[in-house]
Image 1 (tube, rainbow, N blue to C red):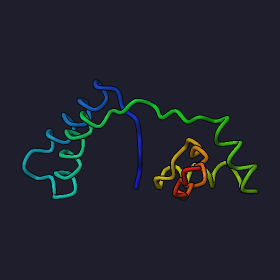
Image 2: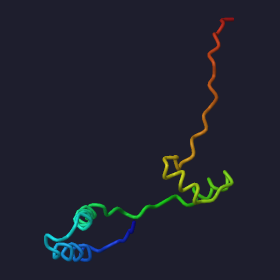
Image 3: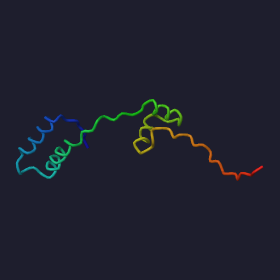
Image 4: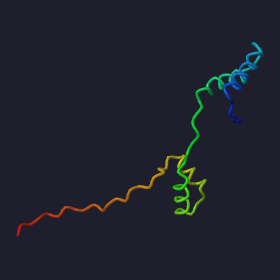
Length: 96
């Protein structure tokens, strides 16, 4: 699988070249044309990670930053959980 970033003009030029094949193009080219049409809506902003937090998490766990990024991509929260206070049990009050 290949992944490339194309400008709108480049994407349009590829579509024109595929369509120029006429009816003779096979299902692979038809699928490529469909993917190029869908790619127009697939432009996402560049991802930004809290690198200071990534480095902190990596050193705390003794792992590489890449492993932390992998964990974050899998749904691990990037922010530290707030420390929970111990649950106090209710003690009945007595009147003096």
